Length: 116
Image (cartoon, rainbow, N blue to C red; front, side):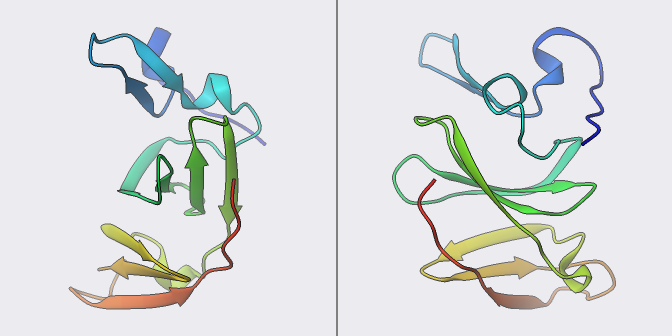
């Protein structure tokens, strides 16, 4: 897997979580070296507890991240969902808003749920 990082220092992480004092508590590429690369994130939403769901460019994999456990699960998505501007996760379904060439439509995808 090739990772493209832009800039230097913390800007190469793709996603960084900070505590209330401004100190980094989670750095995506450092804590998850085998995770898919984040060059640009088209959508992100909160999952259960502390999990996050990401929809990064260029491969448009739906990635469930658990920053407390430094773990992730990656889900492939069909090309018809690429470019979605927003995501929402509820139960076993993922909802994608406005993929490339689909205007302002919502599309539902059933996603296998596992704990990461």
